[in-house]
Length: 244
Length: 244
DNA sequence: ATTTAGTGTGTATTTTTTACACAGTGCAAA
DNA sequence: TTTGCACTGTGTAAAAAATACACACTAAAT
Image 1 (cartoon, rainbow over the protein chains, first blue to last red):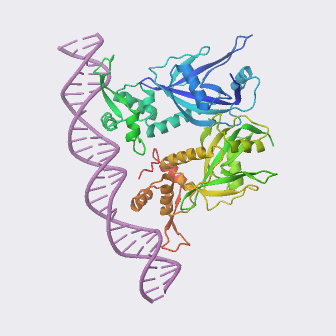
Image 2: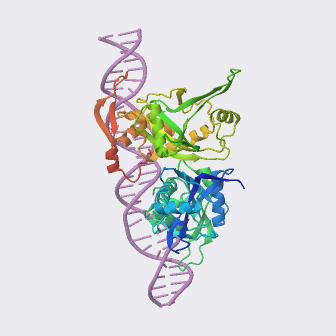
Image 3: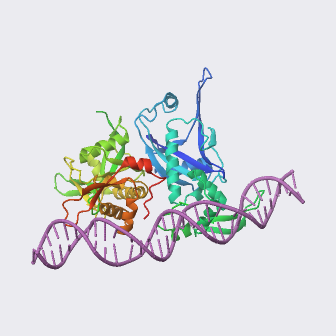
């Protein structure tokens, strides 16, 4: 395989939804001194990696996501590029780089992607490192400038969620209206009236009612719906507009 | 001064508005064979340049814009990064590179910015190359993948224009309501009812009516208004929403 | 049989959006 | 000095969309 490009990286903010909260997938960053056994670094980072010289950025991002999640077609969106001259400046980050990128010390520009994945499908695997979901409002300490990157990703996600039908990427194929409502409430940080929400959603032609009900719940089972991209493309008006 | 980073560039889509149309500033790309005097390349490109190793991307973008336009504080927005492995692939582009970047032949990732500038203030200057405004719907042939970059910039601009008060960056400090209307119509490609537009704008508290009138027009002079960012920041609701 | 935790439904009120026409001003040209 | 031109400035009624709001029903678990 060909060489990586040393000064360009990709950082991927992987969002998932467990019907309760919005979550982000993070990778543990741990560094232990060989001799003293002292823990020098123990925090978390986004999923980041370099691209190969003969590889498109989108392709690279998709490749890694496939590897981590086991899912083929993942929704992926480039949202911002971070290239400040001193973006990696604190001691831990320098230390980490010293141990890993010994050969390269100039600035690294990183292109931010976020991806939306259906939590019910994912099977985590990232061999050697510890990988974990964290609730968006209960994050651990993040390394590098990844807090800043994550915040920007969240902003872009919220923006997009209001104007395009991307919420369904975070839901299973069949979902109930209140699962959808909770998703919008959690991400946008708002609360909607249940009846009005339902009314609005039901007049979207591309939300297809199914002849099926939820199973495995200990209360009245709700009807399931599916999102149809074909119908959406045919019937979409100028913009989605999720005001409510 | 320090060295440039060879594989990262910035391309800037500079928008201006002349009260009639949305325009883009382009630079002529001309290559003439020394011996045969044959014109090998003659087309146009966005304003592009490299960044220095010790310079932030935003700073670099602002620096160049200042140089070209003579204006200090220019509205600048990063909108997308283009890094396809084969983004520069056609013959003219390769030829151009051969003549200019002889020393470097790997892929260049370019970070796209767009800037909005008040046409009435600008004084063009880019020493050695020919620089010109083009109407957005009457563009010449563009070099590299700059048509794609421009299109993406336009999309982002439209998006932002609907949700944030950035249109004023393209207008002089004092403007009339119908200048503002034409701006929105041109960029969004819509047409608004004059009375409803005015009604909507007048209920925005941050559009301040001035005690002044337009001059130099050969019809009834219209009242002038100004945008107040302070009032906007104080009174803004969740989002701007330019639906009409 | 009761509790629990959710589903499913309709209407009236308010707000926002839309559609639409005519008189007035100021300059320029005859 | 008159007339034409090109634009400014103004209000109302009708339609559509958003909001507020409460009760009966279901299925499982105890």
